[in-house]
Image (cartoon, rainbow, N blue to C red; front, side, top):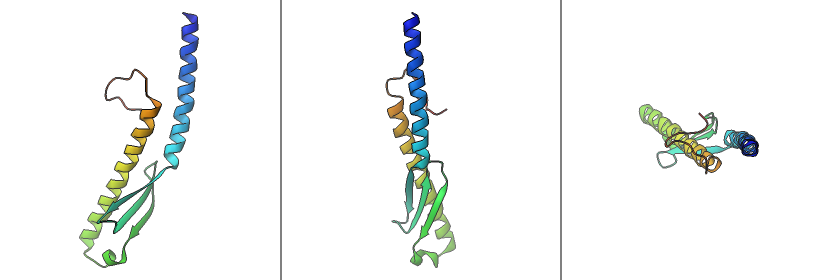
Length: 107
């Protein structure tokens, strides 16, 4: 019994180390969200911080409302891409763990 507990504690410690490594990797990743066929691009990191906004010159002089919509769409696209990458990274980390369905890490 004691051996099982010690083994489990080692697994938990290894998982914590892997989780910290994964969080650092996630924070450093960058994705590019696009809208309008690439006319508006937003670069975002894994912390959901916008690093760069690129707007094609042809769109900049256009309708302001359309430009605002394109920026919002590009930001949302970037957020969805970050979330997908986070889920992918965490699914590798939690593979084999007996987590309830729908439970996501980190909490």
